[in-house]
Length: 620
Ligand SMILES: Cc1cc2nc3c(=O)[nH]c(=O)nc-3n(C[C@H](O)[C@H](O)[C@H](O)COP(=O)(O)OP(=O)(O)OC[C@H]3O[C@@H](n4cnc5c(N)ncnc54)[C@H](O)[C@@H]3O)c2cc1C
Image (cartoon, helix red, strand yellow):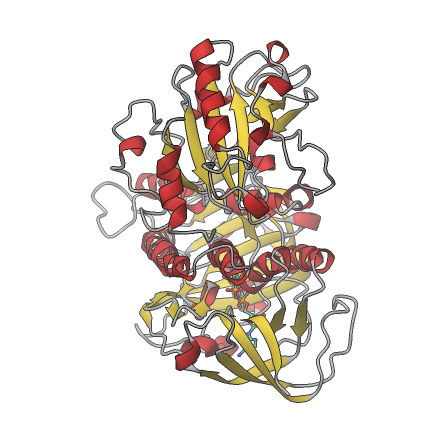
């Protein structure tokens, strides 16, 4: 008998595990299939961007990772002087100051995956892992694709051996040897580069392999190079470049350009020709006159830069591809793991809501339309960045074949905005209102800078009305599947502002027959942020839509949805209105998606517009 599940995820890497986290949140019956015997314990990706940390924090454990990781505060640029000797020429902040609570940091992929596994285990018993196991075939019953309760996808899976639980495998990672048949409603291929799932649905990777070969080593270095605990971009005069990334436990990751190996364009480099000594000798040459050696090598690999994006991300809106399966690029900008997790952070909540029957199936189309352009931007950035980092530094202005180090720094700095993941802006679609929409552009009260349609809502400190605790607004926007209606009514000491809020409160009253229809079952959660001195406002003078209905379902009130943009006793003032650019006279309402991206903005009187937008997204 085939086993029926909601979701099959092929691949338990960062992309697959992020998808599984959403599956756990939505309590979807899910099987993850991975061909690896056990989890990875070292090496691979390590860079965690600000947006990724925000996302992990919204699941409740970003700050734990942040504490364990090595933070990257500054980047140093080392370039050859007129004698060809490398010198520090500049320093810049690694993350653009003021853009996020979390700065770029590094921790190896295995540790990060462990955090993701732990979350899945403690959140749901419906998600299980089969490993080592491989899918053999995928068949889709096309006649059942639009049928809500059907299991149109059949997957034959071969479990390769009995998993021997070791120190890093969880109790859920058990597989029975032999062939199994699984039927599922949806499938996500997160099976990395050269994706098997991709091949089954006719994926074509567009782009090309470059002739640039790089080695990667995780070592505890013994050196007199003074910036070894800084992120450094080092260009030598003639021996290539190194990126230095300080890591946890005294480790340092070195990305080392191997200028002596140059396969013909379009040809694949034979990795077996590489060795730690070959890579490390190249590193020593680049860092001269500084000395470099090591006693402890934790991990190494060698890779050829290929920049490719998949021509499609989905088939029948039943099978989806994510992560390295649909985009590959160089790892130096620390994007691989991040963008891969962001892909499934996007498709995960959409699938969860569709499978839980709270959202319409048509929203699944927005996965490809939102995520593929991001991969294209990434490849564009990576092509430029890799070219400049792999190029020989220009000797002077007349040296046109060389790379200007000023241009390299400018590209790096500009790229920081993109690589942080914070500047992603999804275009207008079914789940993001049109920019030219009356309430989103013509109204001068709608801020244009920080709050932008399709961008993630930044976090600023506010103070809880009920108990005076300062809190980051971002902490309220948890990844629990809820949409949020953030209401900024302005200063409620003004009668007009209070009246506007009361009118809105009536529309948000669940018991009212003409009320806003999407407040049931935690679909849309109203949140209030007023701009009055907290002590001059009484909580029970405010509309009960903002505190009625406890999240715990225990009959009590939910007091933690009303906040003041006010001074706190011990942590200063967050100036949320000022930072968001909200006019205290006119106020603002912001509809935020379950992934914290802004879906709609309008005045307090414009709720009908939000209702119209949600009518095309949610189910009543
Ligand atoms: C050897 C190596 C070194 C890397 N080094 C760096 C680095 O230094 N810095 C950096 O930023 N990025 C690096 N990357 C890239 C980074 O790890 C990826 O961008 C990121 O892990 C992508 O996540 P993913 O989940 O999409 O794919 P992956 O992490 O590749 O995960 C894919 C998963 O699918 C499983 N799988 C594959 N095929 C099948 C199949 N047919 N059936 C079942 N399971 C399957 C694999 O076992 C794996 O667990 C490296 C990747 C690799 C493979």
